[in-house]
Image (tube, rainbow, N blue to C red; front, side):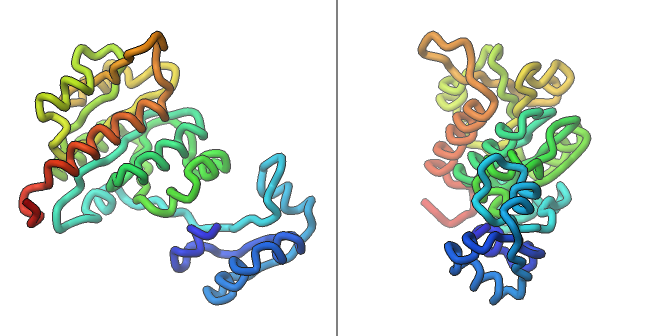
Length: 244
């Protein structure tokens, strides 16, 4: 809630138990300063609207934060986007929220969810994002092909995370591929990206597995890929940004 209150106009109202109101006096003062209504109510009401087994005693009602694809990809006009995460048919809300969190931590410019997947506003997805939902531009785009086309128009190469790819992250880094502005495609937990979406990408890249695990889950693979790009891009500044 602290992160949401940090965005003017985002929080509509707050419902809290008397105990939570006392424990979170600082949040209440911030809500008052932002002219956000704070309603004290019962434990049962908070439990019902929070959709959690063990709620913390307060719930914020917020406006949605998603923006049009073109807006998200032009949010950094001085240099253009450098790193974007694109989830395609992601079905698990915990994974969806964790991808948002990882993208935020890696400094990504936007997160796009495409296709027939989970609602990123699902309460579990929101909790899994741990506030990052309010930090990084979020896009909901039905058609993966439109998302890929917009990414290319914005100057991004498109890499597909695919465990069966012949090219792995080590090779991609060594070849200089990861230094370029990139939109990463991440697929469904059970079925991956599918051949039609893979064909949209410039290259497919696998996360190398050095141990005996058969695979990584979606959120873990997204974290590895996004950080691999972010670390290389920080060593190789974008042209024209004034750094050596």
